[in-house]
Image 1 (cartoon, rainbow, N blue to C red):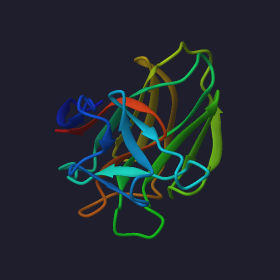
Image 2 (cartoon, rainbow, N blue to C red; image 1 turned 120 degrees about the horizontal axis):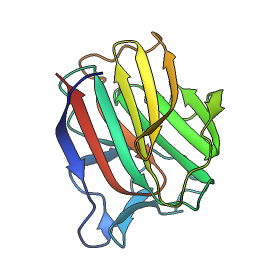
Image 3 (cartoon, rainbow, N blue to C red; image 1 turned 135 degrees about the vertical axis):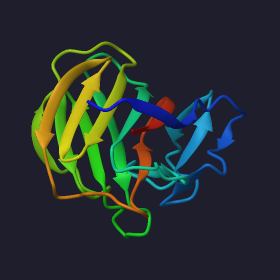
Length: 177
């Protein structure tokens, strides 16, 4: 596994309102800061509206980590890496945890394919998705819950943003060396 270097982080420790200049969104105002958390505002209906960090990771080997706000064993959150902000569908790797089911998609708007189960987890866990070469790994609170080898989205210049959908209190984007 790669040694990870923190390149970007946001703890949302600021006044309620817009995410700020470090973030871009598919629909302005869909994700905002409330009580020092990034949350879905509800203004667009539904809730699958992504936000991504404007600055890209420096390599295709990267990890995204989010402290997720949810009850035990029942998440409804999506985190992404290798996100291409120049594509209409925000191509990249988007991992969704729905309840205790894990789904993987290469576009932000899709739930994707069922790839496994999380097993039990506590309230407000830390989710982490890593991409190292063609290997993807997903962790909850530091315990690996899923891995796969995929080569359907390589990343590359212009396609190395980290993103989130739903509620998070901290998000970090790390790159391998």
